[in-house]
Image (cartoon, rainbow, N blue to C red; front, side, top):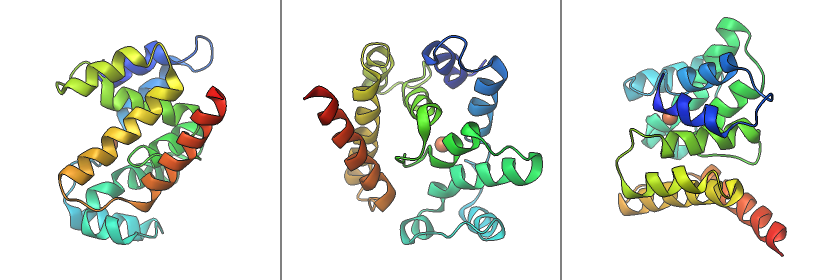
Length: 170
Ligand SMILES: [Fe+2]
């Protein structure tokens, strides 16, 4: 079992999602992660995914959208799993609970060795909403430190989850 699957299984509410659902989520999200950039751009075009400027510069950003489009077209999987996979790279207000779990499990899984991973892994069991926010924050910080452009979708996602977090803690 992959680290992502293992952590996601521990995080999902019992009786809410099947083992198969979580396995598909973990297996499918990075299925195209290692494709060359030009292949990702071609596949995105094939599936009608409109690439944004940041994605054309860094096509790896498209791997979630391409994977979800493939699962939908090839296997008719068009549900919370494909939505979570679609948005797992930048996050989105539309990613749903499974999207949140996938983003957390992806960053916090036991195979990750950077210090933030353990923080994410532990905090996910204490305060899920704050942990989602932290995952988005760490992703944005990474992009800034690497002098990469900030995808507008991650900025929208940050603003959405920050608003939600602040209104919940008022
Ligand atoms: Fe990914």
